[in-house]
Image 1 (cartoon, rainbow, N blue to C red):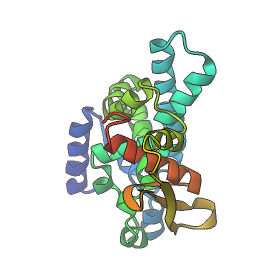
Image 2 (image 1 turned 180 degrees about the vertical axis):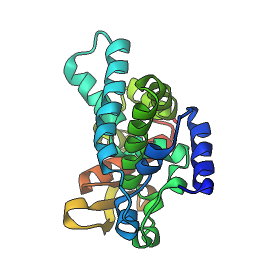
Image 3 (image 1 turned 135 degrees about the vertical axis):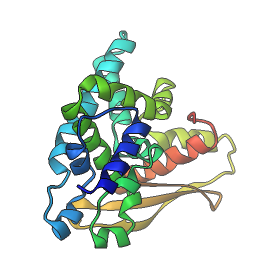
Length: 233
């Protein structure tokens, strides 16, 4: 690892508010598989696997402790909203994680540093790296801080069917028409990423991405709900 890379990762740690003994795992957490093809280094997929469990545990524990009267089914829905691709990608964007990603040339040319799936995967991998290098207690405040906007949405009851919630708001004006369009489709068959746009009276109001068309539409609806202040900030 170069001195320049170490300085860059030290800056990221400052933004995250964590001190690490070394940056080996953090560097790996930010190494996309496409970069490995070009360089032969280890990628972040194993760390992403562990990070998925880490973020699930942290958010599950938080919800269990703070909502003692909610049933298991509702807690599950709340957690799912907090650890979905869009939520984790948003957290990654708040710390500008894309600038630290090591990507292959093709992925760079295709805008990989801004792709939600890459950012969400990297966020999980980074949380795993911090968990292994420091402790889970170091991960918790990072998760709670950078997912705060999504947590506010969930606490207000906005989790799950954002399309229905937006439909109900738009139909307060009976003459309003809402529609969704899938505007792009990227990636191989086993790892697709769709982009959807939501229109109200033929005017573009929001855009979202997802691994399915349905998820992309839901995220486009969520974007507009946030934009109009109906789902928090």
